[in-house]
Amino acid sequence: MGDDQIDVHGTARLLVAPSSAPHIHYICAGSHVQWTFAARWGGVIVKLSNLRVEEDVAMGTDAADWTRLIDRLDEAIPRVAEDYLTEFAARGLYPVGAVSDEDLRATAEQTLRMLVHRLDDRGSGQTATDLVHSLGERRARQGVPLDTLTEAVRLDLLVIWRWLREFAGDKYTVLVADRFEVIFEVLDRYVLEVQTSFLREQAALERDSRRATERDLSRLFSSIPPTASVVERAASATGIDAAQRLDLAVFDEQKSGGALERIERAIASGAACTYTYDGALCVFWRHDAPPFDVASIQPVGGLLVKELDGLAQVPLVARTLRDALHALGPLEVLTPFASAWPAVVADHIMTVLPSFIPSALAGLDGTGAYERERLVTTVRSYMQTGSIKETAEAVFCHRNTVVNRLSTFTRLTGLDVTVPEQAALALVALQTIPD
Image (spheres, rainbow, N blue to C red):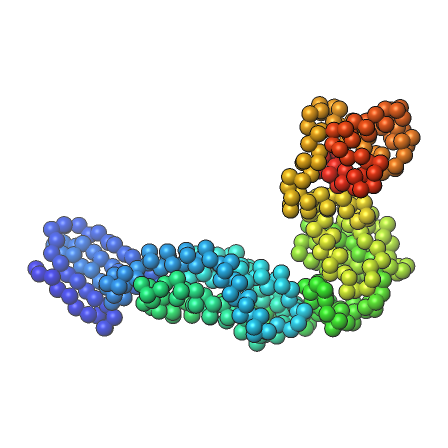
């Protein structure tokens, strides 16, 4: 039997070819827009495919080329995100102060990467779904209008399409054009998911006055520094005068249950307000509010700053305390920030200049573990009191021994803790040595 070929309904192609194999063997391959089915049966080979397969092979626009193109786009996501942010800024979509630059940048990279992965069937898991739902819910809490949110997410299509065409060049122009329908379907599904999450969260906010307050607080915490209108809305939502002096405590969100239980009465009476901010529970209250008992939350570890100059100062201080919690690790009690700042500074220096502090303490490396511990303990005790006598009592040694150890520390490190400037550096540097 010779080869034969027919069209089926104008969209498929049937090929019959001779074969001597007596058994049946199936082969099946496909992608979004193409499919092939082949069977070896009796004395012939039967192959059925749609025209797209034949056309793609002829033009070199196969799945491998598409995957390579998507890989290039994935690697370029930081540049793609910058392009998106430039377009976004030019359009001025969101209300001023509604969404922070930090939020916009992080969301742009995350969602663009997720969409690019979806173009090649890599980004359809639960993580991608959670990301999309989180975006819609967060924008609802931030008071972003739905129409501007929709325009912002549709902007992804323009940017991705532009970069795909650039990477494709003349060679793969047909490859990209042929998959426009796939690209459009991915983006359309993304827009629908974001809108659905947004509307669901918006409905919850409108039903629940507490959630409405959270929306105004979200705006407050998302803009640093917050605009006057954002501060006024937060003041109206919380019942706290915008210029009222406030105290602020921040706890690790995962360990904040105890704090919430202890301040529940203060929250119910309106004496304290709470907001969960990027992994941290923030609690702020009027500095002179008698119903609020700070001592009641002492068993819960966190950081405390007192007498802030009004609501406008809360977001920046909250972010600082959140970062400080990450630097300090678990805290057993509510700790004034005045006692914790050296560890925060040390963590920041180690991030920016990782060799700076080790260089300052390099002279201690030649001492034995026991001598090193005695020196560090004595220096720390002295810096807490500034008194040779009290240090001697604290470390159980003679006053002359304290003087000798301080001299030894100065000789080894070059840091004289009786000189304020050098003592400050020593105080920060010693935070990197475990107790």
